[in-house]
Image (cartoon, rainbow, N blue to C red):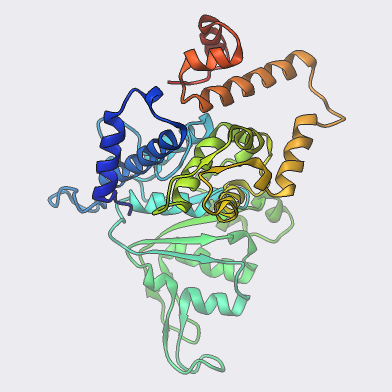
Length: 389
């Protein structure tokens, strides 16, 4: 759980008193944005039913307890204001109050575990343990022992009884990452937990009861694996009660600047605030991010390290692959090119979105930079459904 330190609240109040924003220089504006992001997350945490400030008389296992406050949807730790993220938050607000099994699907680096942790933190099981296991990290034999535990002497090296992770997660949530990489033999045992709520440790003959909510995740096409006989159909239908899709970053390019500032604030915590140059923001916005949010976070960390004591980070420090990838994306594919009107509209939409972001949503300044009238800009914002403050 995140909490704002008292000195940060004081600094936030000080910057707010120095409004309007036009009176703040670029470093202070970025500092204000970072503090506002921290404050929003802290408020989300206080709205979480697991917060110590929540009413102690509220029953901890009441599924009807809503995570929203005053009709507002929490961010669930998801940074961004794009339509895919808004839709994801809306779905999570329904998922967290249930106890159903969830399947989170998405590419590597899209934040599947972040989603699973958010579901647990806002769920009726929030007081129980959250246990995570990557199913592709261990061999089948080791994974079985890790999940279900074993009895002393069950195999060579089993010198004592060991509790399995399912037992550790009893009463809480178990996050099974990369479930598509499990073997058919292990899938049978997972199915038993879901169907009967029991498991048998390796080397034992007596089943043990367990009460866990399972959240499974995968970056693979489970339907294709079923067709190939590599994934059990009955297990698929058991874990796919509620399907949550983590959108790739290329489908939420409008969130890149917000994410970059968030990671910049996170990496520079406790140090002098840093800003990213407009050219760097433009390059980040053009790059397709095949590694998704994780790749962006790693790149921002790299920039913070390489920029040393510099207050402003220029695009010259960007990884060559990102500069080259952004340039290639700007040129576009040679085949399958969209019709000119659609391409022009997309280019105009992306440009307006970036300029509005750079000007903190101020339409007057954005229109001046775009060299169009404010009225014309408002019309285009409405046309492209761009939400700007």
